Amino acid sequence: MPHAVDPNRAAQHGNVVMRLLDELFPLVEGFYVDLHKNPELSHAEHRTASGVAEWLARTGYEVHKGVGGTGVVGILRNGPGPTVMLRADMDALPLEEKTGLPYASTARAVNEEGAEVPVMHACGHDAHTACLVGAADLLSETRDEWAGTVMIVAQPGEEALDGAQAMLEDGLFDRFGRPDVILGQHLGPQPAGLISHRAGVILGASNSYRVRVYGEGGHASQPNTTVDPVLIAASIVTRLQGVVSREVSPSEMAVLTVGRIQAGTKANIIPDEAYLEINTRALNDNVSAQLEAAIERIVRAEAAASGAAREPEIERFQGAGVTRNDAQSTADVSAAHHAYFGDEYVIHLPDPFPATEDFGYFGLPDDPQPIPYVFWFVGATPHDVWEAAPGDTPYEKMGNVPSTHSPFFAPAREPTLRAGLAAITVAALSYLGDDSPKDAAPAGAPTAVAGSGSATGAAAAPVTGPSGPPTGAPAGAAFPGPAPEDTPGRPGLPGRGPGDAPNDAYDSAYLASSWSGPDEEDRAKSTYDADMDAVMEAQDEEHRQEWREGKSEESTLSADMAALLEEDDRPRPPSGPSYGGPPPEDDRPGSEYRL
Image (cartoon, rainbow, N blue to C red):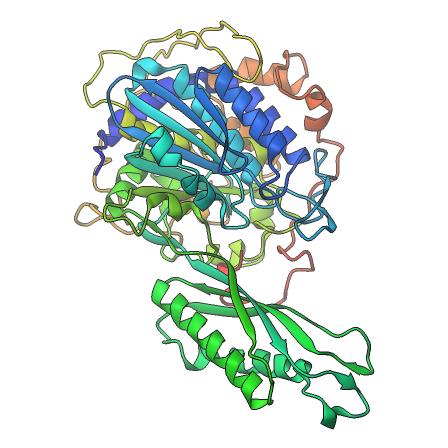
């Protein structure tokens, strides 16, 4: 088990490192916008991978491309210490974007079946990747603050649930070393900037199956001379609906969906075969196995009941197990996040999400000595969208905002990226930092911003005195000064102190529909200005004013960033539910589990 430094020390290291953020942030934001405009499907992430590799090379990493297909690995060795792996996924979805953003994707690509499809970053992988290279850059430029090895992994094919396995089979750990701990994050439907942890299972298992049933075709006027595969398929669909309700224990979560059914070419022809695709979800590997056994039993039984002369074909073509966070490592990382962000901006999720990741494969779950990992959520919903969403509880609201895999998914760009950058950097420092106190953090450290092609040579602003974390809106930038002293024993997590109340998604003030009282801020004030006030320090007021008036010099990876980021006169993304229709009139119980 890797040793984690005191969470207050991790936060102090984070404060020093994150002083470089304001200088680096325009480049990270530019990279994010560029990735969002130019998404690529699973295992076709060539442009994205090249951008990642170039950024890592410019900031001093040993870079390896083509790992597991289009994967990229960056290694930065900085003396003795643990090896910490930071992972992000790069691929996008076959979906037409409908956000109305000025940098919305209009890309199209040919999928694995040879069809041309629209492509969109509707799952936040553009933000994951931008935060990954930004954190890699910050760590490279502040090597005096930590010791050990940073292992950057930009993964292909997460949406296909096979990219992690492909990198492992290509010798990821054999070639570049086995990490001591693995860290990753994902955008979520929570308010922008909120960090959400859960020890144990945080994401469910998923499996997808192809089923082909065979009959004997013929003329529709003489069905008695045929064995109708359409009837067999229909019977399978109907019978499968009883598996969850009648075979799975009520104490377990399970979902079984027939997402595709295809048969025939003409109304008056009974076809020879029918094709189905079935997806299952569960929070328990045993339940996943139970669902698979039920599918095979029912498919074969229905074919036999109809007198099919040929056995049906059943193939599991995609799947991943549960994502199970190591309890102690989760306590370590969440404690560091509490110390850095403050208690209002870090919560414990009471329940897992049934969505699925292949991130857990990196932990080698079948190995006698699996690698501990921590995976958390970074809230991405714009605050005005969250406020307007129907629902009396946070989970009801989360079910009524455009979330991942929605064509309307439009993260609040700046607070989300800043929080994601800080979260993964501080998490890394919770293992790479040291416990020995320092008299004062060095100010004025030089910066070399990767991805720009040249070092800026600018110095970080010195810290003049301690201050508390920003209040009233999500954090995301460093607050100078010592971290809180009451960090050990974080609420709602392993190791919490006696008497601590659970800080879950229901009692967090940050998840409430308002995060400050009416006397603390002007309700008419724009959400974007409120975000800016939260994520930028008070001493940057002059710079903010120049930024608003368009006087400050811009530095981005995209030549057209000025046009892209000028959103005042652009259409805003809709704030309706993730499926794009009008908000439902009822409370839609259980919608908290819909991603």
